[in-house]
Amino acid sequence: MKHLVFLLTLSVIFWNSQIFSKTWVDMPVVPDMTNMSEYDKASLWLEDRGEVNLVIYPNSPLDLKPLVNVISIVHVEAGKVTANADKAGFEKFLEYGFDYEAVTPEWLIGPVQMSDFADYLAGKAPADWYTYPTYGAYVGFLEKWEQDFPEICKMYDLGPAGKSSLNHRIYAMRISDNVAVNEAEPRYLETNTIHGDEVLNMMNCLHMVDTLLDNYGKDSRITALVDSLEMWFIPNMNPDGTYPQTDNTVDYAQRRNVANNWDLNRNNPCPCEQGNHKLYGLYSYYAKETEALMKLHGWYKFQFAQDQHGGTETYLWPYGGIITRPKDEDWYKWLCKRLVAQIHDDCNNNGYMTSCGGDGVGHIYTELYECHGIRCDMNDWVGNGKSVTLESSIQKKLPPSKLKEHWMWCKEALFMSYEILYKYGLHGIVTDSITGEPIFGVEISRNGDISNGTVLTDSCGRYVKYMNKGTYTLTFEKDGYQTKTISNFNIAAYDERYDLNVRLWNGINIGKDPISLINRIKIMPFRRGIKIFNIGKNIVMGIYNLNGCLIQRLSLPNASNVVWDGSDKNGRSLRNGCYILKVKSNNKEISKSFILNR
Image (tube, rainbow, N blue to C red; front, top):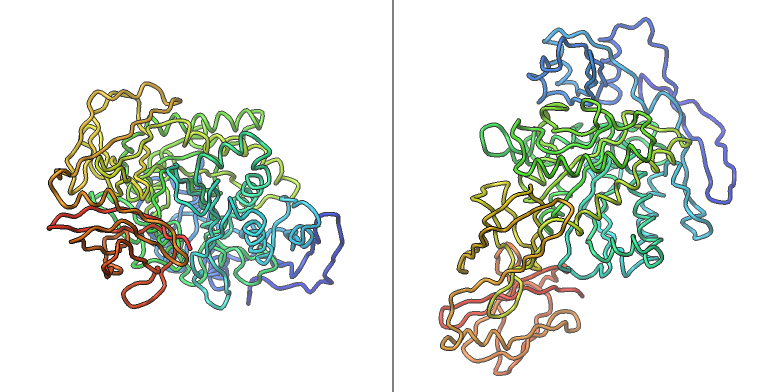
């Protein structure tokens, strides 16, 4: 840091332990700013870091409403508001004349003990999750887990973070009992540290992944979780913000991403008061980090997502960008209150997790603050799933001595949030009544739902709905199929599971139409692609992606089978995933989905 923070050259101290090597490196020293004006302090922070943390003293938090799109609100309490601003946002903020202080970022108040976790990564000792990792150690964890648990764990590289010179990437971990197969299971996504200085959440996520993997097959509860769910974890959505200057310490961690100096939790598709949605949140395009996340949402639909943050202590439900309440708010209240009650039990009601009026739960817009382009809104409004936000600590940096205590307070509630996904709610699979194949993209609505009230089946034909208690008329519809309506379906309790499998008819008379040959066609894995058997005459076939775009038209020889090698019409090898085989005969068409897994 050029002006504000001077690096104190220290002799690097190493000592060996049974578990890992620890080090103090390049500890920042903050100069005395006692005699500086708040404006001068803010100006120096902005010059050095591109952002400034503010404590604002409005008459009412509502006075800041004109600024919600130009500064980031972090925490609201009686008489003051904590916020973060870039240079443009700060200049706009000054126009309103609020009293304020420019405060030292939490990470610079004291040095942070780091670890390279060398012994753990070498397989010599278990991990101690109560010390912060270097970036190299962080990536090493993910690589080690994929290598040690290949049947239940897979690492995904979603793409680079925004600042190419830092050479950081966005990684996701997929955990399931058959990790290479898309099964008919609820799919869960957890994102952490979208604000680079909220590293506590990364630590809890890494600890959770390690716990799930290490105890699978040993602990019956964890084994049931992994067998019943497909779980995705992104431990750090903003590695540039966490390690902006060096990979060896988080002492310089900042809220915003480095490349754009954007608040990444204001860069997601979100609803707005005009009744539609903003594609890029507060900005004009996706940052690289957001682009990586959108790629994952393009691949899969997530029935439930949890976004973890720091800055306050509460469980929250959508929306933040509009005052509108979600369709199933009673279900959200039940879920959040249940999780917070567990946290209160585990911390012995010591005052932890009591923001938002004292009970630790709330609707983001009305009980926390207005914020546009947030992850929580995106999955509910745009992704056709449910989503909550866990704000796990007012203090974003905890000393190592406090990390274990914090983990013990939150661990059980996190396990409960996973179990609820498969133990409770409405679950089902929609299939073709003729072929028995799952149908992708069936829209399921209840009582005339529109927009965010509907859900869609995924590539396995699976759907999951978490709803308020009540009696519903359920409608299942997709182009090319006759709509099916089920009346008087009763959801009597939140803590029960309801299973409803549905078959849709495409209107074809199988006895007379040549398309009945689809019943005989089988798709099997074959070397580097797939082999299609039992092909009849007068058949036209093509491979399509899930967006309906033709990838490869198959040439049918005078034989009963054909091989597709997994390439497109230009000969390029395609990634593994779900594809659709479309079979046509006499202007009739039926589709079969399959997984390419080489």
